[in-house]
Length: 292
Image 1 (cartoon, rainbow, N blue to C red):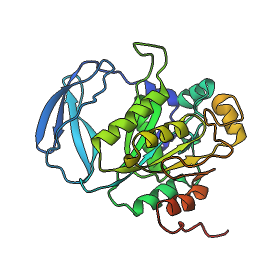
Image 2 (image 1 turned 90 degrees about the horizontal axis):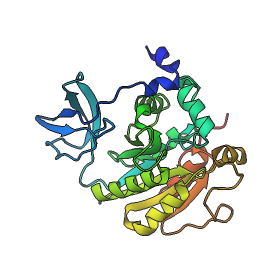
Image 3 (image 1 turned 45 degrees about the vertical axis):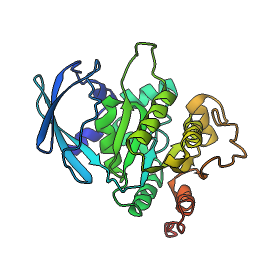
């Protein structure tokens, strides 16, 4: 079964049939509530914690037209003050996804086993979170919700910590043919600041698109919610594939950047970023891999 998933073509992620406006029963702990899916068949509601303690739990969802489904949810402790927010494409997965043709190839044709993890990033995440037990991990991406099963398998297979995913719908919207990636990330950041006001986030992304600009903007507007920023630097070839130029997109400080409201570090992969992140968070440099 695992090998079947690895050989699965990306287009199969988009073969699911949505249930728009369906009434769904959500069982949380000993409580059951009814909610309505949106026009795309997605559920985005806030519910009261039914006495669940901090950590990961399973909730059950079922509509009249479907079988019961289990969904993992993380409850964040009231005294938790640290969290990690990570981009996905070109930050943890080497896909060069933003270019339209490459996005289509990677999303619909390439098998799961062909997708590669950015070196050292999973190790860095695990080391950072080892210093902050129970800290929430949030993966924010402009990828479609249809790819959630693949992304969950990919992150687990490559050793990334379990985390909540904030993705987008597939296809056109009421106002245009394509969704705004920056708007989705900007909205997600502000909702997390509202829902978890006690948490200060380590923001991790890459310089292939808008992450540096969005993270700095968020830090300038809400500095009390940002602990630090870490940016993976793409190579010149990766920048060309990402947006068609050799320079960092929308980042006037791509040569001589300076930290703004919060500290910021940059590096080409997780192994280069790890000691900088550890020092930036106030500890000693992470142990580097032994020489071969």
